[in-house]
Length: 133
Image 1 (cartoon, rainbow, N blue to C red):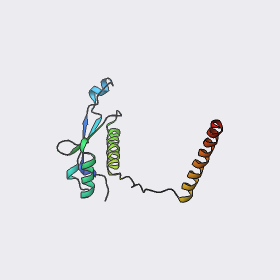
Image 2: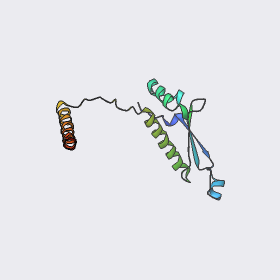
Image 3: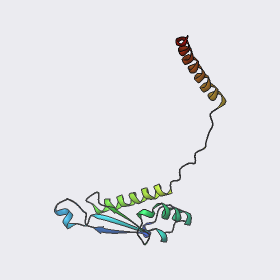
Image 4: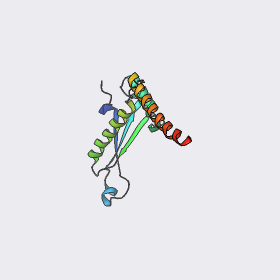
C-alpha cells in the first residue's frame, strides 16, 4: 500500500494568485489550493496516527491539511507543485531517524591517548623543573 493519498482523497481548488503580476493575476485563477482530510484517509492506522502527530501544527481544526501553490502562472503546474509539497511533507513526517548505537573506544585507542598525554606531561614537567633549580 502506498504511503501517499490517492487522487480521490485530495481536493483541488483554483483561486487567484496573490501579489504582483499585472492583469493576468487579476483575470485568471492560476493558484492551486490542495486540501487533504488526514483522519479519513485510507492509509494504515499507524501511518495515519504518525501523520496526525507530526503535522498537528499544519492541520486545521477539522484535521484538514491545506497546501497553497502559486509559484507559476499555470494552474496545472501549480497542481503538480502542490502534490510535490504534499509528498515532501508526508516523507518528512514519516521519517524515523536511525537509533544511535553508543560505542566505546578500543583498548589500543585508550592506551595511545594516555601515552600521548603522559609524554606531553613529561615534556612540560621537564621544562618547569629546570627553572626551579
